[in-house]
Image (cartoon, rainbow, N blue to C red):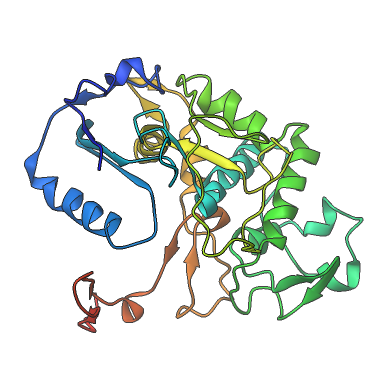
Length: 316
């Protein structure tokens, strides 16, 4: 199992890899070794070909390591700093950012505006009463059956994770700003920070890790020719995904420079669930980039790959 630590000769320095505009020192901290041990243990117990770990702590990279290969093929490229992984639903944090951008610059008046105000071509009887807030937080109550939009519950009354809302959001962003989600991210974040390993791809290339499917014809896995940021084809390197989180942690200000207006980050990372949603249901930030459960629903869960999962049932 190839194992490339931060000090290894196969590892580029931070300033040599993606994120050239964001430079962090490397300070090894052994306190985080158990995290890496858990990643390695998981790697050896699940169906995967490679893995990576990067931790930023107190403005420094304290752990960075890459293991395995980009696919199960014998001649596959080893996982390394510039390997880009399919980020699945993490892509929604980028879409949430684009919505916050549109709101900040006045392209969208309010997230409580009706979706029909921006997409009047949608079926009014189905979409009536649904706001941008609802589709941001998966409380819209809609689903698709074939090409038909179906209502499952009243907007704001419950929660259900469905792609139909994400599709509407990306259309609203494009229609109001004249820019795609990808355009906004490249202009506002990727280019200023020198990100070259975060993007949406219509074609495979050597740095993209394979997606390991549960079975050959997995219907949940789809590719797309679109590179506008509206489809499930986003790949990001481990380092740039960590930097993306770091940018939000620092409210858009890195290396002493305000890269993104603080207000955009604050809206994108603040709870946005409607007040009508029962507090026992998931409370969401923009676009469902995080799920936060209320105290009485939280449990301390200890997982072990060597034995059964244990839930202590503690309220936190």
